[in-house]
Amino acid sequence: MNQNELKKALAKLPLGKVRYFDSIGSTNNEALAWATTGANDLSLVIADEQTAGRGRLDRKWFTPKGAALALSLILRPTAEEKPHLTRLTGLAALAITDALRTYGLISQIKWPNDILLNGRKVAGILVESVWSGEDVDCLVIGIGVNVLKGAVPSADLLLFPATSLEESLGPEVEREKVLRDILAGMIALRPHLGSDSFMSAWEKALAFRGELVQVEQGDGSLLTGKLLGLESDGSLKLSNDAGKSITVRFGDVRLRPGVSRP
Ligand code: BT5
Image (tube, rainbow, N blue to C red; front, side, top):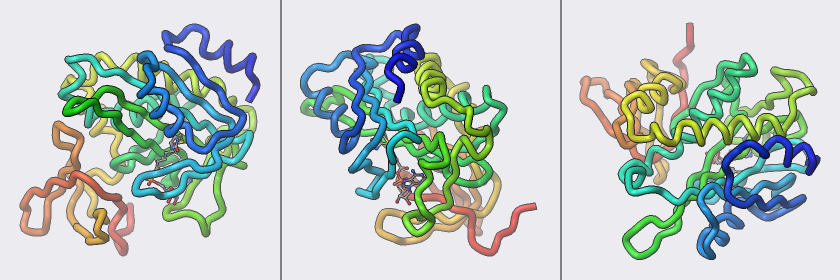
């Protein structure tokens, strides 16, 4: 990554300190370690390449050199934010969809943490916390974005089809600018984390709303239902065949097989 371009792009943002790595295992690991040794609010870890990038459930996240964004933003939540920390994945997801809209791209959030462009995954989010006794001390918001085509892993490594911004925008798309726009979006949305308007914007950006979906839960079991929206903590709301409402806290959503879209 071009260090001068990076500095220029980030210059106007009210960030804490920034740590940049040409190559690292995982920016989230670095940020979690930094958070425990006193990183300021809005400190940022960014890397050109990750050799051990992580998704949820210890899945792998691929960040080959020179083609993607891999960043971890450290938040020290305020007392007002603490009741709403389960909304932080939504904060990152909305900041990404907002940023992409400024490039003329309409993306959607595949609950809970994937960003889809043309029905394919272009970005993933991993929020992790550092506890101090019973209290959350710090949050790390990890974001990976496939900016250039070279970031997209081969299909055999994927659970879901993937794409890059380059496929929609051409090779001129600049990683530093996308980074700036996503960070600026998170900073701008943060004061609204507890608001109803935040929840409705998040809900509006969800993929598959009103459609029949399957949610694969952590234990491999499948729930099927119509995707209604979100609970106030960001859990997913479905309704089953009998019209009974179901709340899902963890899982991976996909369109139910056999359901074709208009
Ligand atoms: C995620 O997990 O999507 C969260 C990804 C978070 C990555 C960021 S990068 C910066 C920070 N540092 C880290 O170490 N992590 C964060 P999940 O929903 O569990 O999806 C993981 C799955 O996505 C994998 O099992 C693959 O199928 C797929 N995948 C891996 N790399 C991908 C890529 N570059 N593009 C699209 N899909 C990918």
